[in-house]
Amino acid sequence: MNASVLPLPAPGAAGTGLRAAITGVGVTAPNGLGTEAFWKATLAGESGIDRITRFVPDGYPARLAGEVPGFVAADHLPSRLIPQTDHMTRLALVAAAWALEDAGLDPAELPEYEMGVVTASSSGGFEFGQGELANLWAKGSQYVSAYQSFAWFYAVNSGQISIRHGMRGPSGVVVSDQAGGLDALAQGCRQIRRGSRIIVSGGVDGSLCPWGWVAQLAGGRLSTADDPARAYLPFDADAAGHVPGEGGALLILEDVESARERGVRGYGEIAGYAATFDPRPGSGREPGLRRAIELALRDAGAEPGDIGVVFADAAGAPDLDRAESAAIGAVFGPRGVPVTAPKTMTGRLYSGAASLDVVAALLALRDGVIPPTVNVEPDPAHGLDLVVGAPRPAALRTALVLARGEGGFNSALVVRAAD
Image (cartoon, rainbow, N blue to C red; front, side, top):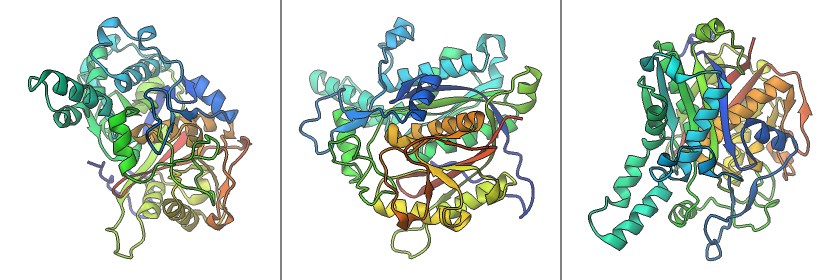
């Protein structure tokens, strides 16, 4: 289910109070394991997209993915957790631990009911389900069905993080495909507003296994190119699908006053959010992304001119790219705001993608630089000021992150630099 739109203020009002400080981040990305490794690679234009190694892809029409490099679970997690989890959950557990460390928080020193976990899930669980299928075929009906295990798995990441760190406050999982990373952060902000002190939120996803790969191929949106530099080309005239990936980011959302009391400046704050749905196919009505952008800006008490950069959803499919560029152009005007899609270096990480974009946006605000979109030659028909080739220095205070999910989900999130 998608996160609902927060109650909106009257036009010109200063927002709904959706505010939370972001005081820590943890990143597991295909072009960098750890926040600074990811950011260094992103600014250098280094891609993590390559031929799949986690299974043999020869018999499939699509053979490229973004895999997290150099991740050995035993180097980061207690041995007892390894047999209880799959690859995606291990990535999430590590990202959560890094985010807490980055925020300077020791959960053992905080009231357990003041801490919670709200994450996103989408394609994850296929690897776990495939293992259950193998057990079912090998050993019979004593094992749970793959469908049951997949449905149950949606809650595993959130639950494992909560259990490991003794967090007994609000917990939940948002399922809205690629939009889920933003929707989870918004739900985390709601819990902060309702009195929670700390919420671990965002998304880490992945299903790079044969069963998951077949499911993704069925959607008809995967690129079948074999050259990593030509496979995922959003807003390019040669765009022909996307490359999937694994990983994402988890963030520490903290009550603003709590952060100030701790003397923590943090990375910035979530200032506004909105979610919409597309109309039914064939209705002739406009997709919902433009309205999501406008509502998120209003929720943040911001004008289009306040936004220094837009992190695009960047579907890599011609029809979806046209819809996104039209929405951005309708709000900001032709080439009216710098736009970037650093996910061209990671692939689309499903529920992990948007939270990773939020981290990239926060680091861009911190360092005064817009990361590039790689390998893309922008099609002038899109009318975008797409940052390509190299980072662009810029004085940034506010950024907008966009995400869309299969089935018509649209989400927009505004982040501001730390005061």
